Each structure stands twice: as C-alpha cells, then as structure tokens.
Length: 211
Image 1 (cartoon, rainbow, N blue to C red):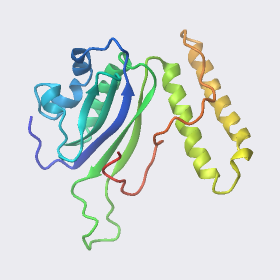
Image 2: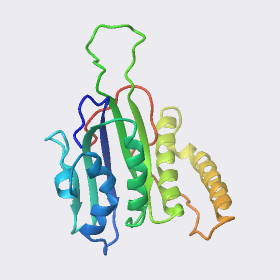
Image 3: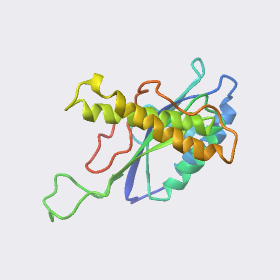
C-alpha cells in the first residue's frame, strides 16, 4: 500500500552471500516482507529505492550475492518486516553477514532554528543473518573486534591488543557453550580477523548512502 506522511525514511544496506543453489523465486519469497511493505506486487517492482541514485535491491547470480542499498518510507512497524526478512535469509545464506538499517527522522530538519532540546529520532541497528547460529556469532565477533581495535588503536599499538581480542573470543565461546547445551551447533567463532562492516551505533545522524 502507499505510505504518506510516514515518520521515517528507512535505509537498508548490506551484502549477503547466498548458496549457489538459491533461485530467484526463493530469494523473492525471503525478501517478501520488504517489497510488500513498499507496496509492490513482486521483488522486481519493489527492488527500486525511493532514491534513484541508490542501486536498490540486486541479486548477482554470477557471484550468488544479494546486494541491498535501498530506502523506503515507513514507521516502527518496519522492524517486524526486518525480523521476518532475516528469518527468510537465514535459510538461503552461505555465511554470516551484517545488514545495516538506519531510521531517519523525516520530520526533523537539521537546518531549522528550533528548540535546542529537539532532537532527531534517528536510529541505527545491525541485523545479522547466517546459515547457523555459529555463523551469525562469527560475524558478530568479527565486527566487534574491528570496532574495538579501531577505537583502541588511537591509544595503543595494534601489537598490544592481542589480549583484548582473546578476551572477546572467550566471551563469545562462553555464549556459544550456553547455546550448545540445548542444541547441536558447529564450531564456536574464533579469531579470523575483522570482516568489514559496521557494528551497532547510536546517536547523531548517519550518512544516508552507505556505499
């Protein structure tokens, strides 16, 4: 359905490696929560972003890569669509991957002279998808390590941060062990080096185009 006067412009950005046997029909079904939210009747019609300069939602069949740089107007109810999308992509993903989502306050104007206490209701979060809980935990671990090293390298040499990485690995191994008590999972995540992407953030307005 059409959406007017929505409080947010919502930007979805990420790349998800898919299994080689994934078909376009399967991908269309997994992404149905997104394109139906945009009021489209198919992925092909809903894949375009509201901004022409953004590539939208693309599937590269040669590399089996789902690419998303897509904006849609919406409200907080879009979070339910994101949860449903992640569930669908978990079944198609080849490995763990982050998906960045930014809610821009469409009613807030940075240039307006208003009450200093007025702040944009922007929000930023990272959703994770993957074929197994272990794969998801691996990419979570890698992004956390990247963020921590990026912060601490302002004060310490990279060679001094090995103990920090070890501590992060131990925390994730502990969490994995707790999960493994009730189900059979793969090996727990350990150091494979940062994989790129952005961890959880908050505060301030983030750039719209996260190419």
